[in-house]
Length: 356
Image (cartoon, rainbow, N blue to C red):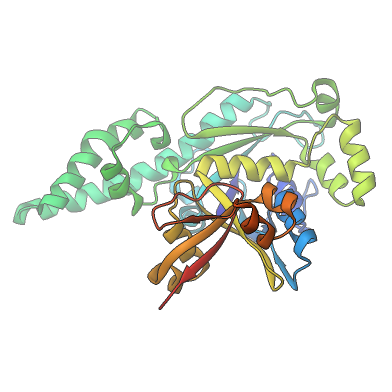
């Protein structure tokens, strides 16, 4: 899973990137990199950690998320303002929007207005999509002179009848209802405004102390989630030892570190879950789409498993902890045998039988 962090300059993007990935990219008030930062974060999962403690494996492999910190956007620049190659590769976008006031770090628009900033960044994505769609339609118009194939005609109807009108009305495509077939057709275009969006509301420390984690809802929208945090404060807390960090989190009324909330919101947006494989060699988390069958989940582990799938042995992570071993779960009848069409659930432990 790959998430792209974007936003206006001085919103706290790179601070969030450092917080999530434990990197140390420059974040002082004069820093303004034009290069993207890329790093991988381990997904905190207490369920997997508990299984690790039970099995004491030689190798421990949590799920991971790749974060790309895109340089700050400038208003009204269109596609020339965006790192299109990087953005089109990511699965979802994380827009960091500031609500904090700081006279030493002036907002590029002259005032702090998170609703305006979310709208303006969305507009930059929409303009980039519109440029791409119009170029494609121009090519289809030229192709129409020799006659369009059925697939090309369907694509032209979709772009001209649904996609372009939505973009011209400044509506992001994540808010447009499409059939499964139309979604499939658009997937190859990697349109930016169609990507799920996580809005990270970056509040000041004083505001956090006054409000706690009360959500500053900008406006409920399809394909969008929000997380409220104070990135500089939590970056400082992340550098502390576990006991001291827990004490500071409790002092500010934070039930968990922001990396947990950001990644969980990203999972919800993308509709993905984690299942686990366990043993003395390795305890590992695997990320798959919600609704994935046992056979396809096996394919996430190794393509041979999907090809030669026989069955899956499945048990819930909590029951495995309570019983203490796979053998005890088998004896108690809680280790289930499931076929290829069984849908893997979040937090299940699976062992796959296959033959190739």
